Length: 120
Image (cartoon, rainbow, N blue to C red; front, side, top):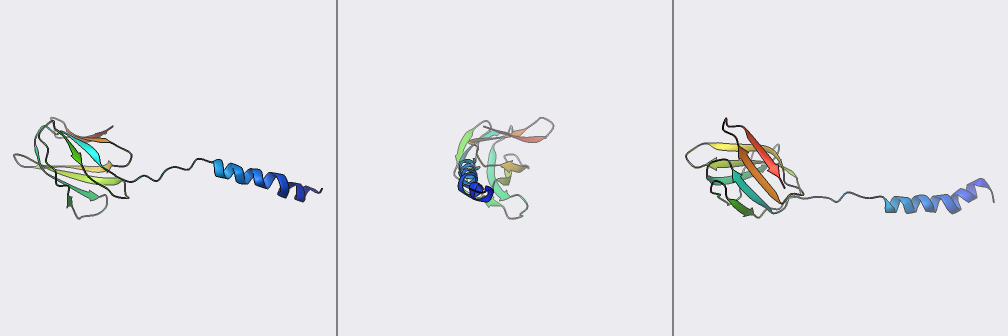
């Protein structure tokens, strides 16, 4: 048996089997999540938009300060901006929020007004 025939007969099937066994990352979508309001104020309106777009979509939820609320959401993208209109005036916009593979999103606002998101 010559070298080429040997390659076709033994090595090529092994390479094909190895390719099939290679782990493939799952395609993640943004889905339902629990929102925790740690902004220090009640959220009167909650809106969302895909990063890089301008149209806001209401999420139909409100949240008292410190509250946890379930948010029904589904989208094939992962990165979003979340805008929270706060009781007493003003709003907080959290940019680049990753909603894929998370169950809990905590919106935080520090005493100096700095904003950040924690994930669980």
